[in-house]
Image 1 (tube, rainbow, N blue to C red):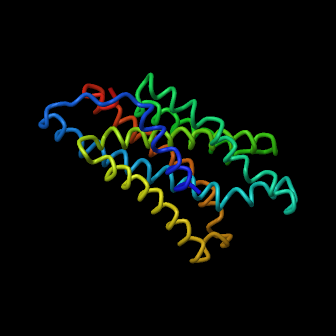
Image 2: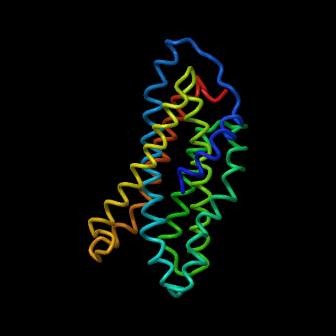
Amino acid sequence: MLATLGLVRVERIARSFPAQVKQPQAAQSATDRPAVALLLVSILLIATGLQINTFVNSKSLYLNYVTTEQLVLFLPLFWIGFKLFALPGAAAARHYGPIPILAICALMGALALLLVEKADSLAMLITGQMLAGGAWGVVFTTGVGAAVNFGTEGREGLILGLMFTMISLATFGRAGLVAGGITKSSEHADLLLLLPVPLWLSGGLILLVLAYITRSTKPWH
């Protein structure tokens, strides 16, 4: 689903960001590689937190308040949040640059997942899940724009492909947890519930570092 959504939106989002001003090759080489590495690591951490929250934890959390038959009404709420915030987030990134928006939304996503973790009512759980979905929507669409901009000079496909690889690795990691029976183990349930918040928080902090190191070059302008 993530890959499909990404491929559908890539061309539109890539066009929505201002073209990058070409900089001297020396300046680019000094910042591009560490910047791309930080971007990819942050996406991997955030996508891993997404996978654990959405495909491992959500079902059991909702079952505290609804029946199994009602799950079909509540599990998609995360993706409704995704849809609601994805394009507005891309619009904000056009004005402020994708990296600062990425960092802010990753940190907001961590707060939303903390709300999910601490939810003591169905309304609080729904609110947290929809806000987390919205944060992922912005991270995903804005991340595409950032990857395209970092991949200028003929490397757009490479950097964008690496970003999707990070998302795929997160998916395979979650599949490994399921295949290993870890998601069904009561011993690991508490750990799995706690993991999404630090993963998103770590990704957001890395993006803050990325915003700092690219503040002078501003590759989105």
